[in-house]
Picture 1 (cartoon, helix red, strand yellow):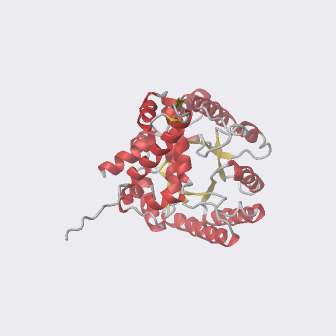
Picture 2 (cartoon, helix red, strand yellow):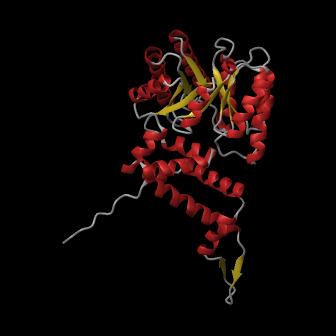
Picture 3 (cartoon, one colour):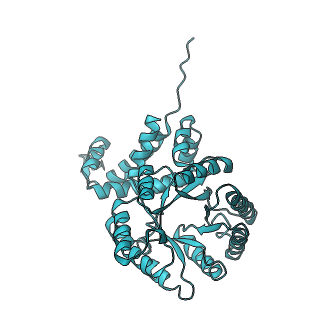
Length: 366
């Protein structure tokens, strides 16, 4: 008897099906109901609801897709389906520097040969015990020594949730100090990533506590957060080096600006403030409007192209990265590596839905 073998669906199909099903649920929940003769009512038929979606305003569609992708980042069932799919290797190769440190160092060397600096990020999510936090700290120390030997000038980006901030703020701060001392020993710099607001305040406080001793440490600041302006102005003694980003986490409206245009406007406002008031700011963006604003503002304020840098994601807009280097700007690529790449990629696509199209094209074309 002939038995046909059913192939695994490609990872982009799994993700798209999840998004479409989630969108259908959201749309049908907002549509009026039909009243039936038996006094029962039900939502309009799904085919009608899905025909409604393409005609929604573009910003509404992007917002809905972004919310779905952020939910997908925490969906363990979907993560299992995508990460175990045999076709996911194309995804990892395009947007992740590898699953091992050795592979990430090779990718970093290639980028440096093109005049692009790197910041290595060991992918991982929040730990729930101090033992795992200690393991992550030791791994980051290893990375600092490795980049000093193989790719000098590179930095390390670290999430304090990996260092245990969700378990103990004091322990995470001490783990951060361990990394900063290792960085000082190896002449390698550390960049502190900013995460969800549930750990954001403690992350900023840990950074603030260590800043006087390690003033070259950089911290990511999210333009979308309503507290950002006051947070930046609160650094009176030592001005921080920052990486300004828009933000890639689902937040409550009372803590975060949710309108896309408002976030961009806030980003541009903070760009000018950072160029005027902070040392060596970095601008993490792929948005053409934001990039042009950085260029224009820096020229108007008399800030040299070498006194700030653009930071972009590995695998995203590679031609733009090279063109900025050719124009004389400093560019640093955020280079993630490791096996826990799924939540990272979902948040990157949520941050900029156009990344979803790049992701799908890369998988379809190989």
